[in-house]
Length: 144
Image (cartoon, rainbow, N blue to C red; front, top):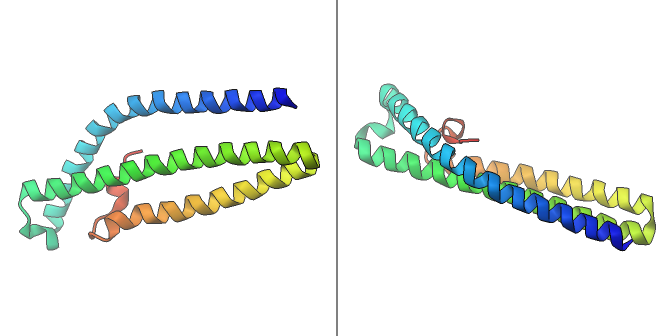
């Protein structure tokens, strides 16, 4: 029983280390891609006209860049929250599984997966609201 807990702790630690390493690499390339998307979206907004015509280029660039950065940071927060929730659900399933057996383990995993799915959907909708409140298309600014 103690072996399973130690193994789960090592797996969780490995996932956290992997997340930190890959986030740094993605951050550098995401800034360049975000700047390209902001410029392309700015050109599209200028071509289409509308409420953004009254803004200067610098103001529009600032608004688009700030919105894109906010969306990216919220997307990263969502990812961290999901991985942390999955690890917590897995540890809870191990704990329940040691007390109740396989049925308790599976039911706890299914329950935590359902909660994480609902949380993922809720946070994803809030992520899109940041751009939609300003009249922007969130799909044009979100950098994966």
